[in-house]
Each structure stands twice: as C-alpha cells, then as structure tokens.
Image 1 (cartoon, one colour):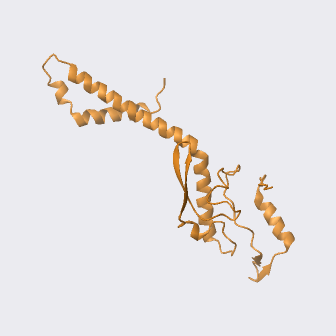
Image 2: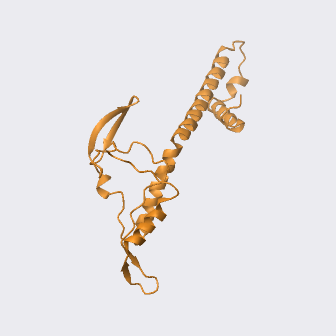
Image 3: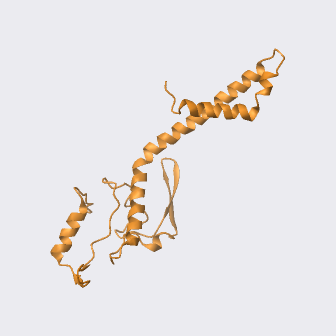
Length: 182
C-alpha cells in the first residue's frame, strides 16, 4: 500500500528520531544483547505509525469539513466586502450576535454543543432553525438598497420596486431554495 506521507517526510521523521537518541549507542555497542536496540526500533516504528495515523485523520477531517470551511470562508469574504462598500444596505449579521450569552447545551452524536445567541428573526432560538448549510454553499448577501447614486452627477435617487425586484432576481444565482413554514 502507498503511505499517505511522502517517503522524504517519513525519512525526515525517522532521522529526527535517530538524531534525538544519537547513533553512537548503536555503533559502539559491543555486547551481543540486541534487545534494547530492537525495542528502540519498534518504538520508533510505532511513533512513526502514530504520526502517520494522525496525518490520515487530519486529512479525513479536512475532507469531511471541506464544505463547511468553504461556506465559512465565503461568509468571512462577504463580511469583509460589506465593510468596504459604501452602500447603506443592511448586513445580515448583527454586531450584538458576536457577544451573545450561552443559550443552552445540546448533545449531538455524543458531542457536547454549546449554543449561543438570541432568537433569530424567524423565531427559532440560537441555531435550531439553520442546522444545515445552504445547498449552494454561498453566504447570504445583504438586501438591495432602496437608493442608488447617479455616477455622472452624484445625485442620490430612489429605486423603483421593479428595479429592486430585478436586482434581487439577479442576485439570487442560478437556483435558490426557499423554506416553507406551515
């Protein structure tokens, strides 16, 4: 089987272990008892196997969490973009959510979860309403502003409802999903 780590990486780990112990003990050993040396080699093999297992576990977790990381990056990217824009549109994330108190503890698949935050706009407390990532893996954008600035004159104009609807449809992307509450 092909190891997850490259051969130079395994050789570097092994040489670091030998450097930590020192090769002089192996070279100057004059007795016929090979027990300690064999134990040492077995210990080094087990340490390298443990390091390899850790790398494989990290790779597996990265694969499992890849979509969540993409979504988190898109939220962070949109957050930076909203701060730089000069429009007066409302931002979906409120400042008071960051310092929200602990709401409740949950157990999910044996893991203890601590849920923070005040009730959302849709009436659910904390994150009970949004336990799944959006299927598009894109962060929700801020709503379209009701005013626009004329580029040539700098005049502030109000947008018509037709133009606001057009910009919202343009902003939605190729497909969108809506949640229905009955």
